[in-house]
Length: 213
Image (cartoon, rainbow, N blue to C red; front, top):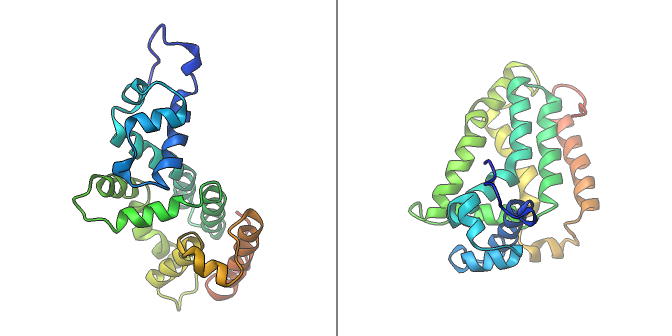
Protein backbone atom coordinates (compact mmCIF):
# COMPACT_ATOMS: atom_id res chain seq x y z
CA UNK A 1 0.00 0.00 0.00
CA UNK A 2 1.33 3.45 -0.93
CA UNK A 3 2.01 5.55 2.14
CA UNK A 4 -0.05 8.71 2.50
CA UNK A 5 1.81 11.99 2.21
CA UNK A 6 2.74 13.56 5.49
CA UNK A 7 2.59 10.37 7.54
CA UNK A 8 5.26 10.58 10.28
CA UNK A 9 8.49 8.73 9.49
CA UNK A 10 8.34 7.10 12.94
CA UNK A 11 5.50 4.93 11.56
CA UNK A 12 7.72 3.33 8.90
CA UNK A 13 7.97 0.11 10.92
CA UNK A 14 4.44 0.27 12.34
CA UNK A 15 3.02 -2.38 10.03
CA UNK A 16 5.73 -4.90 10.91
CA UNK A 17 5.36 -4.10 14.61
CA UNK A 18 1.61 -4.71 14.45
CA UNK A 19 2.06 -8.05 12.72
CA UNK A 20 4.61 -9.13 15.31
CA UNK A 21 2.36 -7.95 18.14
CA UNK A 22 -0.60 -9.83 16.70
CA UNK A 23 1.50 -12.99 16.37
CA UNK A 24 2.57 -12.76 20.00
CA UNK A 25 -0.93 -12.02 21.32
CA UNK A 26 -3.08 -14.32 19.21
CA UNK A 27 -0.86 -17.31 19.97
CA UNK A 28 -1.35 -16.97 23.74
CA UNK A 29 -4.77 -15.32 24.11
CA UNK A 30 -8.29 -16.02 22.90
CA UNK A 31 -9.14 -14.09 19.75
CA UNK A 32 -12.04 -12.25 21.37
CA UNK A 33 -9.78 -11.11 24.23
CA UNK A 34 -7.30 -9.44 21.89
CA UNK A 35 -8.60 -5.92 21.35
CA UNK A 36 -7.53 -3.23 18.90
CA UNK A 37 -6.25 -1.20 21.82
CA UNK A 38 -4.22 -4.10 23.19
CA UNK A 39 -2.69 -4.84 19.79
CA UNK A 40 -1.69 -1.21 19.33
CA UNK A 41 -0.30 -1.00 22.86
CA UNK A 42 1.76 -4.17 22.35
CA UNK A 43 3.14 -2.78 19.10
CA UNK A 44 3.70 0.66 20.58
CA UNK A 45 1.79 2.43 17.81
CA UNK A 46 -1.42 4.41 17.34
CA UNK A 47 -4.48 2.14 17.11
CA UNK A 48 -5.64 4.06 14.02
CA UNK A 49 -2.79 2.42 12.10
CA UNK A 50 -4.55 -0.95 12.32
CA UNK A 51 -7.38 0.40 10.18
CA UNK A 52 -4.86 2.21 7.94
CA UNK A 53 -2.83 -0.93 7.15
CA UNK A 54 -5.29 -3.82 7.65
CA UNK A 55 -8.82 -2.45 7.73
CA UNK A 56 -9.73 -4.06 11.05
CA UNK A 57 -8.67 -6.76 13.52
CA UNK A 58 -9.76 -9.53 11.17
CA UNK A 59 -7.57 -8.09 8.44
CA UNK A 60 -4.58 -7.97 10.78
CA UNK A 61 -5.21 -11.56 11.89
CA UNK A 62 -5.38 -12.79 8.29
CA UNK A 63 -2.25 -10.84 7.31
CA UNK A 64 -0.38 -12.27 10.29
CA UNK A 65 -1.33 -15.81 9.22
CA UNK A 66 -0.28 -15.21 5.62
CA UNK A 67 3.05 -13.58 6.45
CA UNK A 68 3.95 -16.22 9.04
CA UNK A 69 3.28 -18.96 6.50
CA UNK A 70 4.80 -17.14 3.50
CA UNK A 71 8.25 -18.83 3.69
CA UNK A 72 6.52 -22.23 3.60
CA UNK A 73 4.31 -20.98 0.77
CA UNK A 74 7.40 -20.06 -1.25
CA UNK A 75 8.85 -23.54 -0.69
CA UNK A 76 5.55 -25.10 -1.75
CA UNK A 77 5.72 -23.06 -4.94
CA UNK A 78 9.22 -24.36 -5.65
CA UNK A 79 7.95 -27.92 -5.24
CA UNK A 80 5.08 -27.20 -7.60
CA UNK A 81 7.50 -25.90 -10.24
CA UNK A 82 9.98 -28.74 -9.73
CA UNK A 83 8.71 -31.91 -8.07
CA UNK A 84 11.97 -33.07 -6.53
CA UNK A 85 13.18 -34.65 -3.32
CA UNK A 86 15.26 -31.58 -2.52
CA UNK A 87 12.26 -29.27 -2.66
CA UNK A 88 10.17 -31.61 -0.51
CA UNK A 89 12.97 -31.74 2.06
CA UNK A 90 13.15 -27.95 1.87
CA UNK A 91 9.54 -27.63 3.00
CA UNK A 92 10.25 -29.45 6.25
CA UNK A 93 13.49 -27.57 6.83
CA UNK A 94 11.80 -24.21 6.27
CA UNK A 95 8.86 -25.17 8.48
CA UNK A 96 11.17 -26.06 11.36
CA UNK A 97 13.17 -22.87 10.91
CA UNK A 98 10.13 -20.61 10.81
CA UNK A 99 8.11 -22.29 13.56
CA UNK A 100 11.11 -22.30 15.91
CA UNK A 101 10.76 -18.49 15.90
CA UNK A 102 7.15 -18.76 17.13
CA UNK A 103 6.62 -22.32 18.41
CA UNK A 104 3.14 -21.41 19.65
CA UNK A 105 1.92 -20.69 16.12
CA UNK A 106 1.14 -24.31 15.15
CA UNK A 107 -0.91 -24.64 18.36
CA UNK A 108 -2.87 -21.57 17.29
CA UNK A 109 -3.60 -23.26 13.95
CA UNK A 110 -4.76 -26.41 15.76
CA UNK A 111 -6.99 -24.48 18.17
CA UNK A 112 -8.61 -22.41 15.43
CA UNK A 113 -9.26 -25.44 13.21
CA UNK A 114 -11.05 -27.13 16.15
CA UNK A 115 -13.47 -24.19 16.41
CA UNK A 116 -16.96 -24.29 14.83
CA UNK A 117 -17.02 -23.54 11.10
CA UNK A 118 -19.03 -20.37 11.74
CA UNK A 119 -16.28 -18.73 13.81
CA UNK A 120 -14.68 -15.86 11.82
CA UNK A 121 -11.07 -16.75 12.65
CA UNK A 122 -11.56 -20.32 11.42
CA UNK A 123 -13.02 -19.01 8.18
CA UNK A 124 -10.03 -16.70 7.78
CA UNK A 125 -7.58 -19.51 8.49
CA UNK A 126 -9.27 -21.90 6.06
CA UNK A 127 -9.12 -19.19 3.40
CA UNK A 128 -5.40 -18.72 3.99
CA UNK A 129 -4.68 -22.46 3.93
CA UNK A 130 -6.75 -22.94 0.79
CA UNK A 131 -4.90 -20.13 -0.99
CA UNK A 132 -1.45 -21.31 0.09
CA UNK A 133 -1.40 -25.06 0.42
CA UNK A 134 -4.50 -26.86 -0.83
CA UNK A 135 -3.90 -26.51 -4.59
CA UNK A 136 -0.47 -28.11 -4.20
CA UNK A 137 -1.13 -30.63 -1.43
CA UNK A 138 -3.89 -32.34 -3.37
CA UNK A 139 -1.48 -33.39 -6.13
CA UNK A 140 1.94 -33.01 -4.54
CA UNK A 141 2.59 -36.60 -3.52
CA UNK A 142 0.94 -38.02 -6.65
CA UNK A 143 3.51 -36.08 -8.69
CA UNK A 144 6.30 -37.25 -6.39
CA UNK A 145 5.20 -40.82 -7.10
CA UNK A 146 5.00 -40.20 -10.84
CA UNK A 147 8.50 -38.70 -10.82
CA UNK A 148 9.77 -41.67 -8.81
CA UNK A 149 10.83 -39.46 -5.91
CA UNK A 150 8.94 -41.72 -3.51
CA UNK A 151 8.72 -45.49 -3.73
CA UNK A 152 6.13 -46.84 -6.15
CA UNK A 153 4.91 -49.44 -3.65
CA UNK A 154 3.72 -46.70 -1.26
CA UNK A 155 0.35 -44.94 -1.13
CA UNK A 156 0.96 -41.21 -1.88
CA UNK A 157 -1.91 -40.17 0.40
CA UNK A 158 -0.42 -42.07 3.33
CA UNK A 159 3.01 -40.64 2.50
CA UNK A 160 1.52 -37.15 2.73
CA UNK A 161 0.03 -37.89 6.16
CA UNK A 162 3.33 -39.33 7.40
CA UNK A 163 5.31 -36.36 6.11
CA UNK A 164 2.97 -33.80 7.68
CA UNK A 165 2.96 -35.74 10.95
CA UNK A 166 6.76 -35.75 11.14
CA UNK A 167 6.83 -32.05 10.39
CA UNK A 168 4.03 -30.75 12.61
CA UNK A 169 3.79 -33.06 15.64
CA UNK A 170 6.67 -31.65 17.72
CA UNK A 171 4.97 -28.25 17.76
CA UNK A 172 1.48 -29.41 18.66
CA UNK A 173 2.39 -32.15 21.15
CA UNK A 174 1.37 -31.28 24.75
CA UNK A 175 4.25 -29.73 26.64
CA UNK A 176 3.76 -32.27 29.44
CA UNK A 177 4.26 -35.11 26.95
CA UNK A 178 7.45 -33.57 25.62
CA UNK A 179 8.70 -33.04 29.17
CA UNK A 180 8.12 -36.71 30.05
CA UNK A 181 10.45 -37.64 27.21
CA UNK A 182 13.00 -34.99 28.13
CA UNK A 183 12.35 -32.94 25.00
CA UNK A 184 13.03 -29.22 24.90
CA UNK A 185 11.71 -27.58 21.74
CA UNK A 186 14.77 -25.48 20.92
CA UNK A 187 16.88 -24.88 17.83
CA UNK A 188 19.36 -27.61 18.68
CA UNK A 189 16.67 -30.25 19.15
CA UNK A 190 14.84 -29.25 15.97
CA UNK A 191 18.05 -29.41 13.94
CA UNK A 192 18.71 -32.92 15.27
CA UNK A 193 15.12 -33.97 14.67
CA UNK A 194 15.23 -32.66 11.11
CA UNK A 195 18.30 -34.75 10.29
CA UNK A 196 16.71 -37.78 11.98
CA UNK A 197 13.50 -37.35 9.98
CA UNK A 198 15.46 -37.04 6.75
CA UNK A 199 17.17 -40.34 7.54
CA UNK A 200 13.79 -41.99 8.12
CA UNK A 201 12.42 -40.60 4.86
CA UNK A 202 15.52 -41.56 2.92
CA UNK A 203 15.39 -45.14 4.14
CA UNK A 204 11.63 -45.58 4.15
CA UNK A 205 10.01 -43.32 1.57
CA UNK A 206 12.48 -41.90 -0.94
CA UNK A 207 13.79 -43.90 -3.88
CA UNK A 208 17.29 -42.41 -3.59
CA UNK A 209 19.56 -41.08 -0.80
CA UNK A 210 18.67 -37.82 0.88
CA UNK A 211 18.95 -34.79 -1.35
CA UNK A 212 20.00 -31.42 0.02
CA UNK A 213 17.33 -28.72 -0.44
